[in-house]
Amino acid sequence: RHHHHHHRTNQELILVDETTMNRRAIVVLEHLIQAADVVHTMQRWDVFLKWNERLFQEQCFAYQLGRAERDPVLGWYKGELWFFDNYVIPLADKLMECGASGSEYVSNAMENRRLWESRGLEVCHNFAMNLPSYHHHHHHHHPHHPHH
Image (tube, rainbow, N blue to C red; front, side, top):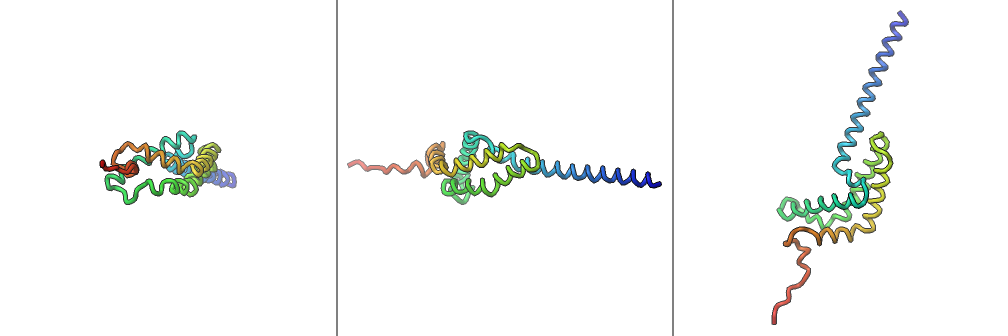
């Protein structure tokens, strides 16, 4: 009788353990799903820049087509710093804590943030100059000289 009771407790423990493991797996998946969208921010600097420029171009097109309130050029530099501090780096920490990734995401994210802080303004300028569009206001900085 006592042995039977003990056996039941064991099964309950196994169930509780499975539930805990499932919950943990779900947490890991949720973090990974979040990260999928921003994983370029946790990769090497050149990979980050490539995808960041594509995102920048998308946002600029949206603005030109009247789908966005604000010109992305204006806040891009500061916005990226905020994003690293408040979203990317905390997420990279979580991915490492829950075992979904090693420490390289954290170190890449922190390195990209550091490089963005020092080079980001210049990068933004280059992004704006490279926009594949001829009617963007950044192409209007040469004054037109009338003929005499």
